[in-house]
Image (tube, rainbow, N blue to C red; front, side, top):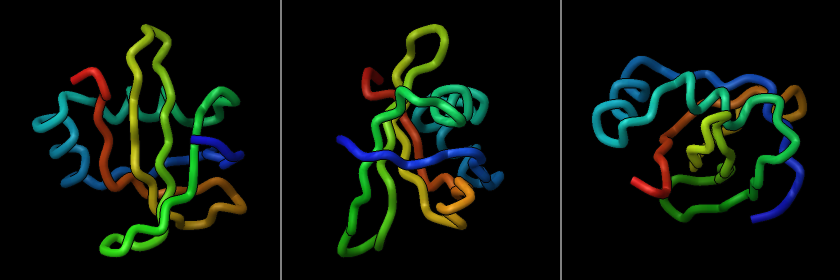
Length: 91
């Protein structure tokens, strides 16, 4: 993964939060900690045939847990994104 993608804010809907927590054991706090306003996030645009244009981002929490997330653009110029899903690649 490569590229500079500015992530200032991530919106996480209640259903998405429930899914990442129950299915992938990831919290919204971990997602934000790993990705928001971090210079060390690896991110790349992906044009998925079924899900459309999105960003795949990989970051790490302060505790060292990697978080892989798929983000949908709301306003990338302002760094605002919707979370589609997230998991820990080690899970």
